[in-house]
Image 1 (tube, each protein chain N blue to C red):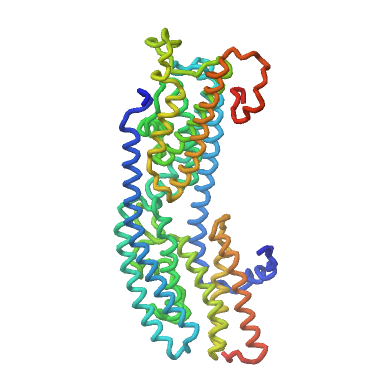
Image 2: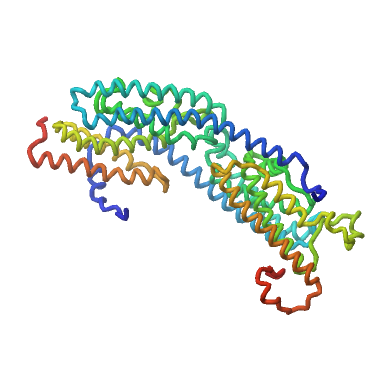
Amino acid sequence: MGIKRPHEAMEDQNSQAPQSPFMSMFESFRAELDEHHDRRERIIKASRDITAASKKIIFTLQRLRTINQPLPQHINKSNAQYYTIIKTAYASISKDVQNLNAYRYARQVSGGNQEYIEAASFEHYLTTASLLTYEEACAKVRALDSEGPGVDLGYEDYVLGIYDMTGELMRFAITAMATSGALPAPSSSENENDMEVDSAAQKRNILTDLRALRSALESLNTNGTGPFGKEADKKADVMRQSVEKVERALYGLTVRGAERPKGWMPDLSESRAVEVEG
Amino acid sequence: MAASALFGQGIFEDLQRKIDEDTAVKDAIREIVQTLEKQNRATQAVLSKAHSTPSAELPNVLTAARESINKEIASIQTLSKTASQYPYYKYSYSWTREMQGAVFGILLCGYLGGMDTAPGQLLTLEDVGRILDVPTNLKDRDAFHLTIEEYLQSLISLLDELARLARNSVTLGDYKRPMEIARFIKDVHAGFQILNLKNDSLRKRSDGVKYKVKEVEDVVYDLSLRGLLPKE
Protein backbone atom coordinates (compact mmCIF):
# COMPACT_ATOMS: atom_id res chain seq x y z
CA MET A 1 0.00 0.00 0.00
CA GLY A 2 1.19 3.46 -0.79
CA ILE A 3 0.55 4.97 2.62
CA LYS A 4 3.42 7.23 3.54
CA ARG A 5 3.77 7.54 7.27
CA PRO A 6 0.53 9.36 8.00
CA HIS A 7 1.00 8.65 11.68
CA GLU A 8 3.97 10.72 12.63
CA ALA A 9 1.88 12.59 15.14
CA MET A 10 1.12 9.31 16.82
CA GLU A 11 4.79 8.41 17.02
CA ASP A 12 5.53 11.70 18.74
CA GLN A 13 2.91 10.90 21.30
CA ASN A 14 4.55 7.62 22.02
CA SER A 15 7.88 9.16 22.80
CA GLN A 16 6.20 11.02 25.64
CA ALA A 17 4.39 7.97 26.92
CA PRO A 18 5.62 6.30 30.12
CA GLN A 19 8.66 4.10 29.63
CA SER A 20 7.83 0.76 28.10
CA PRO A 21 8.83 -2.20 30.27
CA PHE A 22 10.49 -3.76 27.23
CA MET A 23 12.88 -0.87 26.64
CA SER A 24 16.02 -2.46 28.04
CA MET A 25 15.49 -5.57 25.94
CA PHE A 26 15.08 -3.49 22.80
CA GLU A 27 18.12 -1.42 23.69
CA SER A 28 20.25 -4.54 23.75
CA PHE A 29 18.71 -5.58 20.41
CA ARG A 30 19.55 -2.19 18.98
CA ALA A 31 23.21 -2.55 19.88
CA GLU A 32 23.38 -6.00 18.31
CA LEU A 33 21.51 -5.02 15.16
CA ASP A 34 23.60 -1.88 14.70
CA GLU A 35 26.75 -3.96 14.89
CA HIS A 36 25.33 -6.36 12.33
CA HIS A 37 24.27 -3.59 9.94
CA ASP A 38 27.63 -1.83 10.20
CA ARG A 39 29.41 -5.05 9.39
CA ARG A 40 27.06 -5.68 6.50
CA GLU A 41 27.61 -2.20 5.07
CA ARG A 42 31.38 -2.62 5.31
CA ILE A 43 31.19 -5.90 3.44
CA ILE A 44 28.92 -4.52 0.72
CA LYS A 45 31.30 -1.62 0.16
CA ALA A 46 34.37 -3.89 0.05
CA SER A 47 32.59 -6.23 -2.34
CA ARG A 48 31.82 -3.30 -4.66
CA ASP A 49 35.43 -2.12 -4.53
CA ILE A 50 36.66 -5.62 -5.36
CA THR A 51 34.21 -5.86 -8.24
CA ALA A 52 35.19 -2.50 -9.72
CA ALA A 53 38.93 -3.17 -9.45
CA SER A 54 38.54 -6.67 -10.91
CA LYS A 55 36.64 -5.27 -13.89
CA LYS A 56 39.51 -2.87 -14.55
CA ILE A 57 42.02 -5.71 -14.39
CA ILE A 58 39.97 -7.65 -16.93
CA PHE A 59 39.81 -4.57 -19.13
CA THR A 60 43.59 -4.29 -19.15
CA LEU A 61 44.00 -8.00 -19.83
CA GLN A 62 41.71 -7.71 -22.86
CA ARG A 63 44.43 -5.65 -24.54
CA LEU A 64 46.60 -8.78 -24.74
CA ARG A 65 46.72 -10.84 -27.92
CA THR A 66 48.60 -13.93 -26.80
CA ILE A 67 47.90 -16.99 -24.68
CA ASN A 68 50.49 -18.84 -22.60
CA GLN A 69 52.92 -15.92 -22.40
CA PRO A 70 54.02 -14.03 -19.32
CA LEU A 71 52.26 -10.70 -18.85
CA PRO A 72 54.11 -7.77 -20.41
CA GLN A 73 55.56 -5.25 -18.01
CA HIS A 74 53.11 -2.49 -18.86
CA ILE A 75 50.12 -4.73 -18.09
CA ASN A 76 51.55 -5.74 -14.73
CA LYS A 77 52.31 -2.14 -13.98
CA SER A 78 48.88 -0.81 -14.78
CA ASN A 79 47.12 -3.63 -12.89
CA ALA A 80 49.23 -3.36 -9.74
CA GLN A 81 47.10 -0.51 -8.37
CA TYR A 82 43.93 -2.56 -8.78
CA TYR A 83 45.42 -5.53 -6.97
CA THR A 84 46.30 -3.17 -4.14
CA ILE A 85 42.68 -2.04 -3.97
CA ILE A 86 41.50 -5.65 -3.92
CA LYS A 87 43.94 -6.56 -1.15
CA THR A 88 42.91 -3.59 0.93
CA ALA A 89 39.24 -4.44 0.46
CA TYR A 90 39.65 -8.08 1.42
CA ALA A 91 41.80 -7.18 4.42
CA SER A 92 39.15 -4.69 5.59
CA ILE A 93 36.49 -7.39 5.91
CA SER A 94 38.34 -10.61 6.62
CA LYS A 95 37.72 -10.28 10.36
CA ASP A 96 34.02 -9.75 9.72
CA VAL A 97 33.49 -13.10 8.01
CA GLN A 98 35.05 -15.53 10.48
CA ASN A 99 33.56 -18.35 12.56
CA LEU A 100 29.84 -17.85 13.10
CA ASN A 101 29.76 -15.05 10.55
CA ALA A 102 31.53 -17.04 7.85
CA TYR A 103 28.36 -17.55 5.83
CA ARG A 104 26.27 -14.79 7.32
CA TYR A 105 27.32 -12.30 4.69
CA ALA A 106 27.90 -14.78 1.88
CA ARG A 107 25.41 -13.00 -0.33
CA GLN A 108 27.06 -9.63 0.20
CA VAL A 109 30.60 -10.84 -0.44
CA SER A 110 29.64 -13.09 -3.35
CA GLY A 111 29.65 -10.38 -6.04
CA GLY A 112 33.21 -9.34 -5.27
CA ASN A 113 34.40 -12.93 -4.99
CA GLN A 114 32.94 -13.88 -8.35
CA GLU A 115 34.38 -10.88 -10.13
CA TYR A 116 37.79 -11.44 -8.60
CA ILE A 117 37.75 -15.11 -9.65
CA GLU A 118 36.74 -14.01 -13.13
CA ALA A 119 39.78 -11.71 -13.31
CA ALA A 120 42.17 -14.14 -11.66
CA SER A 121 41.13 -17.12 -13.79
CA PHE A 122 41.23 -15.03 -16.97
CA GLU A 123 44.76 -13.87 -16.15
CA HIS A 124 45.69 -17.43 -15.25
CA TYR A 125 44.40 -18.68 -18.59
CA LEU A 126 46.19 -16.01 -20.59
CA THR A 127 49.51 -16.67 -18.87
CA THR A 128 49.39 -20.45 -18.47
CA ALA A 129 46.71 -21.68 -20.91
CA SER A 130 45.16 -23.63 -18.07
CA LEU A 131 42.13 -23.33 -15.84
CA LEU A 132 42.63 -21.90 -12.38
CA THR A 133 41.58 -24.74 -10.06
CA TYR A 134 39.36 -24.27 -7.04
CA GLU A 135 42.28 -24.99 -4.71
CA GLU A 136 44.47 -22.45 -6.50
CA ALA A 137 41.63 -19.93 -6.36
CA CYS A 138 41.20 -20.45 -2.61
CA ALA A 139 44.93 -19.99 -2.10
CA LYS A 140 44.89 -16.80 -4.16
CA VAL A 141 42.01 -15.32 -2.17
CA ARG A 142 43.70 -16.38 1.05
CA ALA A 143 46.92 -14.67 -0.03
CA LEU A 144 45.10 -11.39 -0.58
CA ASP A 145 44.86 -11.05 3.19
CA SER A 146 48.22 -12.51 4.14
CA GLU A 147 48.36 -10.59 7.43
CA GLY A 148 44.82 -11.39 8.56
CA PRO A 149 42.60 -14.44 8.87
CA GLY A 150 41.65 -14.41 5.18
CA VAL A 151 38.33 -14.77 3.42
CA ASP A 152 37.06 -18.27 2.63
CA LEU A 153 36.08 -18.79 -0.97
CA GLY A 154 33.02 -21.01 -1.39
CA TYR A 155 32.99 -23.37 -4.36
CA GLU A 156 29.79 -21.64 -5.47
CA ASP A 157 31.52 -18.32 -6.04
CA TYR A 158 34.38 -20.12 -7.77
CA VAL A 159 32.09 -21.89 -10.23
CA LEU A 160 30.07 -18.72 -10.91
CA GLY A 161 33.30 -16.79 -11.50
CA ILE A 162 34.46 -19.40 -14.01
CA TYR A 163 31.15 -19.10 -15.84
CA ASP A 164 31.75 -15.37 -16.14
CA MET A 165 35.29 -15.98 -17.32
CA THR A 166 33.98 -17.78 -20.40
CA GLY A 167 32.49 -14.45 -21.46
CA GLU A 168 35.93 -12.87 -21.27
CA LEU A 169 37.41 -15.69 -23.35
CA MET A 170 34.75 -14.97 -25.95
CA ARG A 171 35.58 -11.26 -26.01
CA PHE A 172 39.27 -12.04 -26.19
CA ALA A 173 38.75 -14.49 -29.08
CA ILE A 174 36.55 -12.14 -31.10
CA THR A 175 38.93 -9.20 -30.69
CA ALA A 176 41.94 -11.31 -31.63
CA MET A 177 40.17 -12.67 -34.71
CA ALA A 178 39.12 -9.21 -35.80
CA THR A 179 42.61 -7.79 -35.48
CA SER A 180 44.79 -10.72 -36.56
CA GLY A 181 42.38 -12.73 -38.68
CA ALA A 182 43.08 -15.94 -36.80
CA LEU A 183 41.66 -17.79 -33.85
CA PRO A 184 44.07 -17.34 -30.95
CA ALA A 185 45.73 -20.48 -29.62
CA PRO A 186 48.12 -21.14 -26.79
CA SER A 187 51.57 -20.38 -28.11
CA SER A 188 54.30 -22.82 -27.26
CA SER A 189 57.70 -23.57 -28.73
CA GLU A 190 56.80 -27.06 -29.93
CA ASN A 191 53.86 -26.28 -32.16
CA GLU A 192 54.72 -22.79 -33.22
CA ASN A 193 56.07 -24.09 -36.54
CA ASP A 194 53.07 -26.10 -37.56
CA MET A 195 50.54 -23.37 -36.87
CA GLU A 196 49.36 -23.50 -40.45
CA VAL A 197 49.02 -27.25 -40.63
CA ASP A 198 45.54 -28.42 -41.56
CA SER A 199 45.05 -30.76 -38.62
CA ALA A 200 43.75 -27.70 -36.79
CA ALA A 201 40.88 -29.67 -35.34
CA GLN A 202 43.20 -31.63 -33.08
CA LYS A 203 45.14 -28.67 -31.84
CA ARG A 204 44.13 -26.60 -28.91
CA ASN A 205 42.87 -23.12 -29.49
CA ILE A 206 40.64 -20.82 -27.56
CA LEU A 207 37.53 -22.35 -29.11
CA THR A 208 38.44 -25.93 -28.19
CA ASP A 209 39.15 -24.66 -24.68
CA LEU A 210 35.82 -22.85 -24.53
CA ARG A 211 34.03 -25.98 -25.69
CA ALA A 212 35.87 -28.11 -23.13
CA LEU A 213 34.88 -25.65 -20.39
CA ARG A 214 31.32 -25.57 -21.63
CA SER A 215 30.92 -29.32 -21.56
CA ALA A 216 32.55 -29.60 -18.13
CA LEU A 217 30.39 -26.84 -16.65
CA GLU A 218 27.26 -28.21 -18.28
CA SER A 219 27.85 -31.64 -16.82
CA LEU A 220 28.04 -30.19 -13.30
CA ASN A 221 24.74 -31.04 -11.66
CA THR A 222 23.96 -28.03 -9.49
CA ASN A 223 20.52 -29.37 -8.57
CA GLY A 224 18.75 -26.34 -10.02
CA THR A 225 17.31 -25.39 -6.62
CA GLY A 226 18.63 -22.84 -4.18
CA PRO A 227 20.31 -19.55 -5.04
CA PHE A 228 23.44 -21.21 -6.41
CA GLY A 229 21.59 -23.55 -8.76
CA LYS A 230 19.47 -20.74 -10.14
CA GLU A 231 22.39 -18.41 -10.68
CA ALA A 232 24.42 -21.18 -12.30
CA ASP A 233 21.56 -21.95 -14.71
CA LYS A 234 21.37 -18.31 -15.76
CA LYS A 235 25.10 -18.07 -16.32
CA ALA A 236 25.09 -21.34 -18.25
CA ASP A 237 22.80 -19.73 -20.83
CA VAL A 238 25.13 -16.78 -21.25
CA MET A 239 28.08 -19.17 -21.56
CA ARG A 240 26.39 -21.11 -24.36
CA GLN A 241 25.81 -17.87 -26.23
CA SER A 242 29.48 -16.94 -25.78
CA VAL A 243 30.66 -20.21 -27.28
CA GLU A 244 28.29 -19.75 -30.16
CA LYS A 245 29.50 -16.23 -30.84
CA VAL A 246 33.04 -17.50 -31.26
CA GLU A 247 31.83 -20.35 -33.46
CA ARG A 248 29.99 -17.92 -35.72
CA ALA A 249 32.97 -15.64 -35.94
CA LEU A 250 35.15 -18.60 -36.88
CA TYR A 251 32.61 -19.64 -39.48
CA GLY A 252 32.88 -16.17 -40.97
CA LEU A 253 36.64 -16.40 -41.11
CA THR A 254 36.55 -19.88 -42.65
CA VAL A 255 33.98 -19.09 -45.32
CA ARG A 256 35.16 -15.66 -46.33
CA GLY A 257 38.79 -15.94 -45.41
CA ALA A 258 40.90 -13.47 -43.60
CA GLU A 259 41.63 -11.32 -46.57
CA ARG A 260 38.12 -10.05 -46.94
CA PRO A 261 38.51 -6.51 -48.26
CA LYS A 262 38.07 -3.73 -45.78
CA GLY A 263 34.69 -2.12 -46.00
CA TRP A 264 33.12 -5.12 -47.70
CA MET A 265 29.50 -5.45 -46.72
CA PRO A 266 28.03 -8.85 -45.95
CA ASP A 267 25.26 -10.25 -48.06
CA LEU A 268 22.04 -9.04 -46.47
CA SER A 269 20.46 -12.49 -46.69
CA GLU A 270 23.04 -13.70 -44.19
CA SER A 271 21.28 -11.97 -41.37
CA ARG A 272 22.17 -14.64 -38.82
CA ALA A 273 25.91 -14.38 -39.26
CA VAL A 274 27.66 -12.39 -36.61
CA GLU A 275 30.37 -10.23 -38.03
CA VAL A 276 33.80 -10.47 -36.51
CA GLU A 277 33.75 -6.77 -35.85
CA GLY A 278 30.45 -7.09 -33.99
CA MET B 1 37.31 -34.94 -27.79
CA ALA B 2 40.00 -32.35 -28.05
CA ALA B 3 43.09 -33.30 -26.17
CA SER B 4 43.13 -30.70 -23.50
CA ALA B 5 45.62 -29.60 -20.96
CA LEU B 6 43.20 -26.85 -20.03
CA PHE B 7 42.23 -28.64 -16.85
CA GLY B 8 42.82 -31.95 -15.15
CA GLN B 9 40.16 -34.62 -15.03
CA GLY B 10 39.59 -34.33 -11.30
CA ILE B 11 38.70 -30.64 -11.03
CA PHE B 12 35.06 -30.93 -11.94
CA GLU B 13 34.63 -34.26 -10.21
CA ASP B 14 35.80 -32.66 -6.97
CA LEU B 15 33.36 -29.80 -7.47
CA GLN B 16 30.52 -32.22 -8.13
CA ARG B 17 31.37 -34.07 -4.93
CA LYS B 18 31.16 -30.81 -2.97
CA ILE B 19 27.80 -29.96 -4.51
CA ASP B 20 26.47 -33.45 -3.74
CA GLU B 21 27.63 -33.28 -0.12
CA ASP B 22 25.83 -29.96 0.25
CA THR B 23 22.68 -31.37 -1.27
CA ALA B 24 22.72 -34.31 1.14
CA VAL B 25 22.93 -31.96 4.14
CA LYS B 26 20.15 -29.77 2.76
CA ASP B 27 17.93 -32.83 2.26
CA ALA B 28 18.53 -34.07 5.81
CA ILE B 29 17.67 -30.65 7.23
CA ARG B 30 14.65 -30.25 5.00
CA GLU B 31 13.16 -33.45 6.37
CA ILE B 32 13.29 -32.14 9.94
CA VAL B 33 11.99 -28.72 8.89
CA GLN B 34 9.03 -30.30 7.12
CA THR B 35 8.08 -32.12 10.32
CA LEU B 36 8.35 -28.86 12.22
CA GLU B 37 6.19 -27.16 9.62
CA LYS B 38 3.38 -29.68 10.15
CA GLN B 39 3.63 -29.31 13.93
CA ASN B 40 3.58 -25.53 13.55
CA ARG B 41 0.34 -25.73 11.65
CA ALA B 42 -1.16 -27.99 14.30
CA THR B 43 -0.18 -25.56 17.08
CA GLN B 44 -1.54 -22.61 15.14
CA ALA B 45 -4.83 -24.45 14.62
CA VAL B 46 -5.17 -25.07 18.35
CA LEU B 47 -4.21 -21.53 19.34
CA SER B 48 -6.60 -19.97 16.86
CA LYS B 49 -9.41 -21.33 19.02
CA ALA B 50 -8.48 -18.58 21.48
CA HIS B 51 -10.42 -16.21 19.21
CA SER B 52 -13.66 -18.06 19.88
CA THR B 53 -13.12 -19.34 23.40
CA PRO B 54 -14.34 -17.46 26.49
CA SER B 55 -11.65 -16.86 29.10
CA ALA B 56 -13.15 -19.44 31.44
CA GLU B 57 -12.55 -22.23 28.94
CA LEU B 58 -9.21 -20.98 27.70
CA PRO B 59 -7.10 -23.28 29.93
CA ASN B 60 -8.24 -26.30 27.89
CA VAL B 61 -7.05 -24.66 24.69
CA LEU B 62 -3.76 -23.72 26.29
CA THR B 63 -3.14 -27.24 27.59
CA ALA B 64 -3.66 -28.61 24.09
CA ALA B 65 -1.42 -25.91 22.63
CA ARG B 66 1.26 -26.69 25.16
CA GLU B 67 1.23 -30.35 24.14
CA SER B 68 1.57 -29.39 20.49
CA ILE B 69 4.39 -26.97 21.30
CA ASN B 70 6.24 -29.72 23.17
CA LYS B 71 6.35 -31.71 19.92
CA GLU B 72 7.83 -28.70 18.15
CA ILE B 73 10.45 -28.36 20.84
CA ALA B 74 11.45 -31.98 20.24
CA SER B 75 11.83 -31.30 16.50
CA ILE B 76 13.86 -28.17 17.15
CA GLN B 77 16.13 -30.21 19.40
CA THR B 78 16.71 -32.65 16.54
CA LEU B 79 17.28 -29.76 14.16
CA SER B 80 19.71 -28.17 16.58
CA LYS B 81 21.79 -31.34 16.81
CA THR B 82 21.92 -31.83 13.04
CA ALA B 83 22.41 -28.20 12.10
CA SER B 84 25.13 -27.57 14.68
CA GLN B 85 27.44 -29.85 12.71
CA TYR B 86 27.57 -27.26 9.93
CA PRO B 87 28.18 -23.52 9.72
CA TYR B 88 25.02 -21.92 11.09
CA TYR B 89 24.42 -19.37 8.37
CA LYS B 90 25.12 -21.76 5.54
CA TYR B 91 21.75 -23.46 5.91
CA SER B 92 19.80 -21.20 8.28
CA TYR B 93 17.64 -19.96 5.42
CA SER B 94 15.98 -23.37 5.26
CA TRP B 95 14.60 -23.34 8.80
CA THR B 96 14.30 -19.68 9.80
CA ARG B 97 10.68 -19.43 8.64
CA GLU B 98 9.57 -22.40 10.69
CA MET B 99 11.61 -21.26 13.68
CA GLN B 100 9.75 -17.96 13.50
CA GLY B 101 6.48 -19.85 13.33
CA ALA B 102 7.34 -21.98 16.35
CA VAL B 103 8.45 -18.97 18.39
CA PHE B 104 5.27 -17.12 17.43
CA GLY B 105 3.24 -20.03 18.82
CA ILE B 106 5.22 -19.93 22.05
CA LEU B 107 4.86 -16.15 22.39
CA LEU B 108 1.11 -16.31 21.82
CA CYS B 109 0.63 -19.23 24.19
CA GLY B 110 2.82 -17.36 26.69
CA TYR B 111 0.79 -14.17 26.33
CA LEU B 112 -2.40 -16.10 26.96
CA GLY B 113 -0.85 -17.57 30.11
CA GLY B 114 -0.18 -21.06 28.82
CA MET B 115 3.59 -21.30 29.16
CA ASP B 116 3.70 -21.18 32.97
CA THR B 117 3.31 -17.47 32.40
CA ALA B 118 1.01 -14.83 33.77
CA PRO B 119 -1.58 -13.72 31.21
CA GLY B 120 -0.33 -10.68 29.31
CA GLN B 121 3.31 -11.59 29.74
CA LEU B 122 5.90 -11.18 27.01
CA LEU B 123 8.40 -13.99 26.89
CA THR B 124 11.83 -12.52 26.24
CA LEU B 125 14.36 -13.86 23.76
CA GLU B 126 16.12 -15.62 26.64
CA ASP B 127 12.84 -17.05 27.94
CA VAL B 128 12.10 -18.54 24.54
CA GLY B 129 15.65 -19.89 24.33
CA ARG B 130 15.15 -21.63 27.69
CA ILE B 131 11.82 -23.10 26.56
CA LEU B 132 13.36 -24.39 23.34
CA ASP B 133 16.58 -25.33 25.10
CA VAL B 134 18.69 -23.65 22.41
CA PRO B 135 21.17 -20.78 22.76
CA THR B 136 20.06 -17.28 21.78
CA ASN B 137 21.96 -14.55 19.97
CA LEU B 138 25.14 -16.62 19.83
CA LYS B 139 28.30 -14.68 19.11
CA ASP B 140 31.25 -16.60 20.43
CA ARG B 141 30.77 -19.93 18.68
CA ASP B 142 29.18 -21.34 15.56
CA ALA B 143 26.19 -23.49 16.50
CA PHE B 144 22.44 -23.62 16.12
CA HIS B 145 20.65 -20.83 17.96
CA LEU B 146 17.71 -18.43 17.93
CA THR B 147 18.55 -15.04 16.45
CA ILE B 148 17.30 -11.61 17.45
CA GLU B 149 15.84 -11.15 14.00
CA GLU B 150 13.83 -14.36 14.26
CA TYR B 151 12.53 -13.36 17.67
CA LEU B 152 11.50 -9.92 16.40
CA GLN B 153 9.75 -11.42 13.38
CA SER B 154 7.77 -13.69 15.69
CA LEU B 155 6.99 -10.76 17.95
CA ILE B 156 5.47 -8.86 15.04
CA SER B 157 3.35 -11.91 14.22
CA LEU B 158 2.19 -11.89 17.83
CA LEU B 159 1.12 -8.23 17.55
CA ASP B 160 -0.84 -8.98 14.37
CA GLU B 161 -2.60 -11.82 16.12
CA LEU B 162 -3.33 -9.76 19.24
CA ALA B 163 -4.91 -6.97 17.19
CA ARG B 164 -7.30 -9.59 15.85
CA LEU B 165 -7.83 -11.01 19.32
CA ALA B 166 -8.75 -7.56 20.67
CA ARG B 167 -11.74 -7.37 18.33
CA ASN B 168 -12.78 -10.97 18.93
CA SER B 169 -12.56 -10.51 22.69
CA VAL B 170 -15.21 -7.82 22.41
CA THR B 171 -17.39 -10.24 20.45
CA LEU B 172 -16.96 -12.75 23.28
CA GLY B 173 -18.02 -10.09 25.79
CA ASP B 174 -14.56 -9.58 27.26
CA TYR B 175 -14.09 -5.78 27.40
CA LYS B 176 -11.02 -5.87 29.58
CA ARG B 177 -8.66 -7.68 27.29
CA PRO B 178 -8.63 -5.03 24.51
CA MET B 179 -7.27 -2.53 27.03
CA GLU B 180 -4.54 -4.93 28.08
CA ILE B 181 -3.67 -5.66 24.48
CA ALA B 182 -3.62 -1.94 23.66
CA ARG B 183 -1.07 -1.28 26.42
CA PHE B 184 1.00 -4.30 25.42
CA ILE B 185 1.14 -3.38 21.73
CA LYS B 186 2.02 0.21 22.56
CA ASP B 187 4.84 -0.91 24.80
CA VAL B 188 6.26 -3.24 22.16
CA HIS B 189 5.81 -0.58 19.50
CA ALA B 190 7.85 1.83 21.61
CA GLY B 191 10.59 -0.79 21.64
CA PHE B 192 10.55 -1.20 17.86
CA GLN B 193 10.85 2.55 17.48
CA ILE B 194 14.32 2.67 18.94
CA LEU B 195 15.69 0.07 16.52
CA ASN B 196 17.64 1.30 13.50
CA LEU B 197 16.26 -1.14 10.99
CA LYS B 198 17.58 -1.24 7.45
CA ASN B 199 15.57 -1.97 4.37
CA ASP B 200 14.86 -5.59 5.01
CA SER B 201 11.79 -7.67 5.73
CA LEU B 202 12.01 -6.84 9.43
CA ARG B 203 11.85 -3.15 8.61
CA LYS B 204 8.89 -3.62 6.32
CA ARG B 205 6.93 -5.66 8.82
CA SER B 206 7.79 -3.46 11.79
CA ASP B 207 6.52 -0.45 9.82
CA GLY B 208 3.14 -2.13 10.00
CA VAL B 209 3.13 -2.28 13.81
CA LYS B 210 1.84 1.28 14.14
CA TYR B 211 -1.29 0.34 12.22
CA LYS B 212 -1.85 -2.48 14.70
CA VAL B 213 -1.52 0.04 17.53
CA LYS B 214 -4.17 2.12 15.86
CA GLU B 215 -6.47 -0.84 15.21
CA VAL B 216 -6.50 -1.77 18.87
CA GLU B 217 -6.86 1.83 20.00
CA ASP B 218 -9.92 2.05 17.79
CA VAL B 219 -11.42 -0.94 19.58
CA VAL B 220 -10.73 0.65 22.98
CA TYR B 221 -12.18 3.92 21.70
CA ASP B 222 -15.35 2.20 20.54
CA LEU B 223 -15.74 0.59 23.95
CA SER B 224 -15.09 3.77 25.90
CA LEU B 225 -17.53 5.73 23.73
CA ARG B 226 -20.25 3.33 24.76
CA GLY B 227 -19.21 3.21 28.38
CA LEU B 228 -18.27 -0.44 28.11
CA LEU B 229 -14.76 -0.25 29.52
CA PRO B 230 -14.51 -1.90 32.93
CA LYS B 231 -13.61 0.51 35.74
CA GLU B 232 -10.18 -0.09 37.15
